[in-house]
Length: 490
Image (tube, rainbow, N blue to C red; front, side):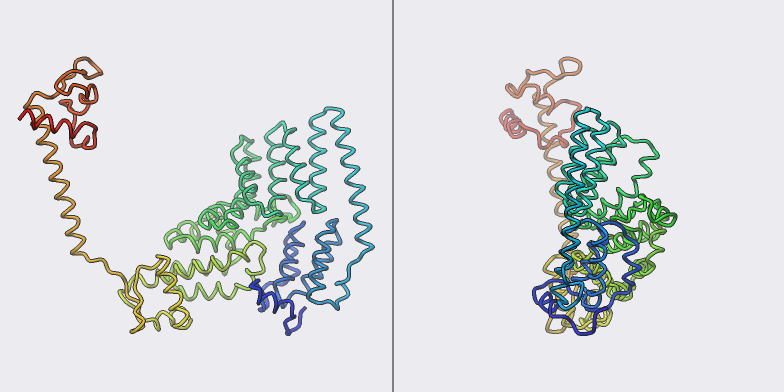
């Protein structure tokens, strides 16, 4: 574990504007990373090692050990380089060139073998064998970190899929690679392909939780917090049950996301994007999502406090877990905006019952200083998120109260104009009929094209038919000319 003195690497990172977490997280690193499998373990350990000045040594050493258990040389070199930048005197900061050379030779041999097998399958013209050959080759590329080649192999594999199950498998493979590439458009499109195709009910149930989770991730990374919340809230508890029964089961999906992540991501996105009524009905009263919330009780408490208008308690819970979330691979970039939206919603909700409130009262309610509250209020007013005025002389926030008398006068004036127009149009209709300018219906299902309107033809018949309502056709063509003909006749 790192000492109390912050290495120069993190001082420079903070000066460059990169996120640095100095506080110790609430989770145990070994227990946390044991929930995951596959390449996400290395990526998460690397992120923690390059962000946390408290856990960097433990995390980067674990990332190096994890990389050496696989065949991804690039990730191993990246982890060693990070440790060398932060702690150059550590024994693990030196590259194991023997392991690199041996692994690269083995990777090259495996690649040539799989490509040779695939060429043989193509010569035999057996579609199923070719499909499986591309599948093996794509997974091999994915394991060694050649993600573009993995995507190409899986894309060619799609051409040899003959059943909906095969299409679902290749789409899930592409989703996994796209998550590692942070290609969220491809994640979303391939998830929709699986969801929209016709499948057996058993297969649909098996894929439902995975698809909801990855679609939620795609929306979260794109900043669409409302859509992300809806996707996470709709995640089937099947993923949770699979993890409890057998963490190695593919339905647990812990190579990408775990049930705890679903609870945290869904809860934070809901807090940032939903009203208090929606939080109660769609989150707290959601029997399916309640199974996930039980894994992260602090998220449930934060949502309950927000619904109960205990905004300072909600924000305190979120702030206490900020270091944990800043070390999450999907939340780190989103936490500033998520927390900003939750906080501004809380301020708006707190201010609704008041016509004016002092900055000191606001600062006490949200456990901050008047200077910070002032900056936040100015930003919210400029963005149009808060309809109020800030009186800096008296240190008071004043609500923009709508003038009820003026509103009634405007509504009365609009109603009188509408009534006058209605009367004018009905008098016009009466004059048209009295002057014999009405075009009579000459055959069933149609209107004549003669009459006093001349060139206006059938359209004039539609306009002035005896059974029509002229008011409902106030925007009809020819109105001005018809009115002029009436004045001439009179």
